[in-house]
Length: 97
Image 1: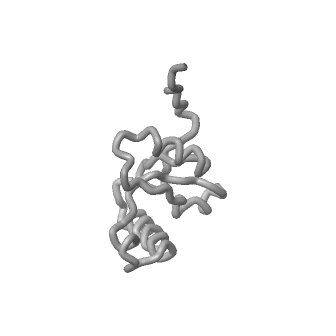
Image 2 (image 1 turned 120 degrees about the horizontal axis):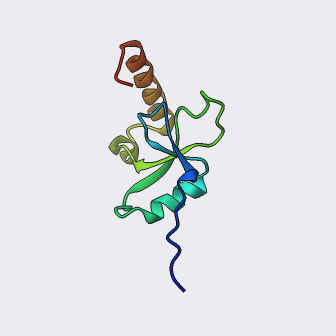
Image 3 (image 1 turned 60 degrees about the horizontal axis):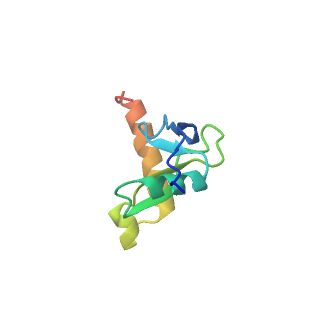
């Protein structure tokens, strides 16, 4: 039997808060996307730090972990706070997005 290669695009949208990153509706669909990625070694599934701004309960990204997170220099809450602060600063300064 042939492998299933159909990957519908309806399982993700572009995140308006994170610079257009792909945002998956569930952790399960993010995991499936990571499985099909060619260079999936080191990719992590993490919740969007801005998911509560639009009332979205579960939105997930696939990407590399920051080096400081892996080494224990920062925790996930600090990372999310830093990302939110950077987004607010970019919006106040008239950033590109």
